[in-house]
Picture (cartoon, rainbow, N blue to C red):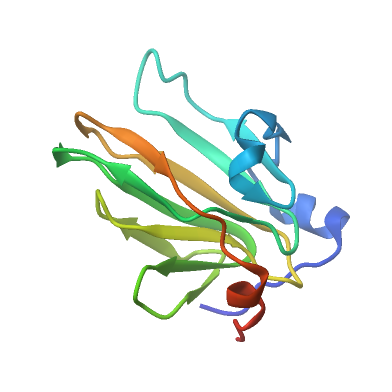
Length: 148
């Protein structure tokens, strides 16, 4: 995919077709920087899907989507440029149009690049005994080593 970095917030909002939504205050303690959440479906009626937006430099903590069967998460990148990393593997650059399938029980994190806003749709995959397990933050030292 082509690099889709967008640092200007107004330009980013034009590119972000699902809109950034409201400050993600309920989960702020699991993020470095500001994130925004725009729920697109009602989880009481169907699979939960939300647009998650990260300001430049924002990332979530390491975490897992636990399940005894099925589960996991799918990310569809819709605007800007970000990162995805699984424990023990190099970080992957993400741009609008990219997708990531995250198996259940895999430790990972995702977020924006330092010089770009970033949004992805997050699909919670159906499974049995599913839960999110939030872990330690991605340190500034780890994050600042990432380069395109």
